[in-house]
Amino acid sequence: MTETRVPVELKIAAQAAGIALEAGALIRGFFERGVATEYKGDVDLVTEADRASERLITERLSATWPAHGIFGEEGARQRMEGEYRWYVDPLDGTTNFAHGFPVFCVSLGLERRLQGQAEDEDGELVAGVIYDPTRDELFAAEAGRGAWLNGRRVRTSSTKMLAEALLATGFPSRKRHANPNVHFYQEFTLRSHGVRRAGSAALDLAYTACGRLDGFWEINLNPWDTAAGALLVLEAGGSMSTFEGGPFHLSSREVLATNGLLRREVSGLFADMLAGKDLSPIPTPREFAEARQQR
Ligand code: IPD
Ligand code: CA
Ligand code: CA
Image 1 (cartoon, helix red, strand yellow):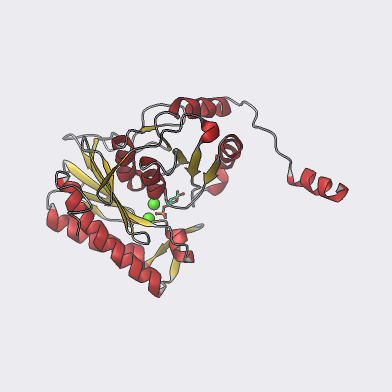
Image 2: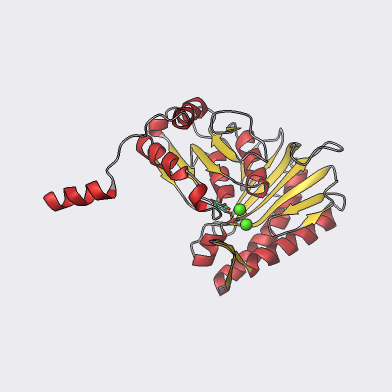
């Protein structure tokens, strides 16, 4: 089944796709049956589906590539000294999943690391697979071999101006009060066709890769959220950077993905905002209430 969805020359991604499809079917089953939700923190949710998916992925990756390391969101840490390391998000979009909102996926990204490389230094991204089990969409990429969706080559969009762009962002479930993203959200919403907050960073990146979105940004993502999606965006012709256009790393606390054509304009706007330039004015709730009374 994966042969028709991932070209044979993407050998690693094709095998990883089989694992992602299996994990996707597992979480879809939990989704259909319903599953209890627990709190990892504040509003950070986890379910039995997250854990079961990570167990399955860890077993399958270890059986397929016994020397590869694994770094999973739900705690899997295996062979961390290895040359290759899989970043595993067994269920990206858990809040959606827990509420019955059908936007979530499995994300597997492979990094190749140099011998003795410090933990805070990145290696190179080698392969990535993202599977959305509710739409049955399989995104796959390998370094130098392009980005693919269900067996078809995908490329980033050709949108040239922010004013004509559809963007996405996300908000963290931890330390929400320390996150200024709502300000960026305001400004980009007023200057584009709109900003979506669908609730799965990996799918936001996959959608940027295939041109459904023109760009995506978020603060405080983790490597399991971004490893596969970043490679998809790059292989599809897009750009990955920090907000002001600096180099992207898996450990970056800021992620900006664009179709490449918008990078300069979007980074410029971030730079202006971060330098304290005033945001476009909008009425405060109080002003809105007063104006309403005068109507
Ligand atoms: C979350 C999703 C969400 C993003 C959060 C992530 P999780 O991942 O990707 O879109 O805004 O920052 O933590 O917890 O559902 O795997
Ligand atoms: Ca997750
Ligand atoms: Ca995630």
